[in-house]
Length: 124
Image (tube, rainbow, N blue to C red; front, side, top):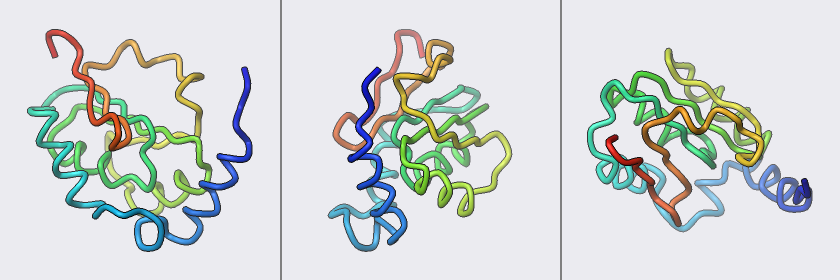
């Protein structure tokens, strides 16, 4: 599998400088709230967030009552920051490319980066 090392390095540098304060043009909290509202009731569900960045949406999904939240990002620095910011029960952060994540099929809802907000599986 090909990897995009240049892109990973770029995002690692962005997250070292606190990405949401200096690079992104959207408000992290407002964006996360909108996505969470779009997802609907996550109570009791297992949720996989792909491209979790610094972890705010994953933590909000956790607080909204999800049974388990797995949050993944290919930026090592983003995951390091997320783990430091949000040490919560039933919330895990992993530094992995989503194409290598082999447990995705077991989840009832997926939260993706803002440009692909949320995919809900049938019956979820």
